[in-house]
Image 1 (cartoon, rainbow, N blue to C red):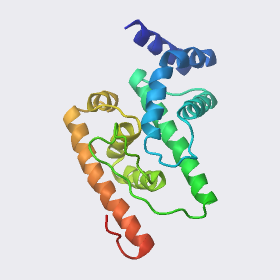
Image 2: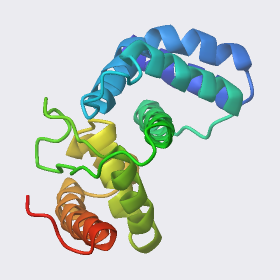
Image 3: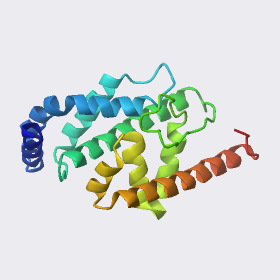
Image 4: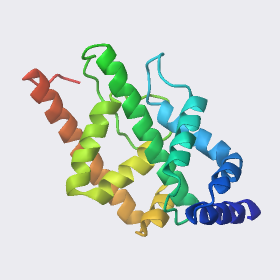
Length: 198
C-alpha cells in the first residue's frame, strides 16, 4: 500500500515538472516495467531483437525525454509505458525489415492467452499498422488491444484505466480481435494477390 502511495506521489511530482521524480520512480516500478517488457518481447521470435532490459532502459530514456507525461495513476503510468515499448519494438522491427530488404510476411496470433502466451507474434509491424487503422474507427478497441496484448493488463486494470466496465473490455477485445484478424488477412491478400492458407 505504501509503495502504491509513493508511486502516486512521484507521478504527481513528475507531472508537475520535477525531473528527479522519474529517477526516484523507476527503481520502485522497475520489476513491473520488466514484466511489461517481457510480455512485449515474447512476441519476438528473432534472435537479433532487443533484450528485455534494453527495452526497459529505452522506455525510460523516452520517458525522460518526454519530461512531462499526463499520468492519472499507477495503472495509467504502466499503460503509457506499454505503449512506449510497443513503439520501440515496432521501430526496431521496421528497421530490421528494412535491413533484410522486405523480410517475409508472417502471421499474428491474437488468441485469448495472447498476453501470457509463450508463442510469439511474428509480425509486429503488420499488427501495428492494423492497430493504427483500427484506432481511426474504434479508438477504444485499439487501446484495449494495446493494453492487453502489449501491456499484459487484465480486464479489470483496463476497465479501471479506461473507465469502462470489465464486460465492455471483453466485448471490445473480442470485436477488435475479429476486426484485426480480417484486416491482417486482407493485408496478406493485397500483398500476394491470393490469400495464403493458415
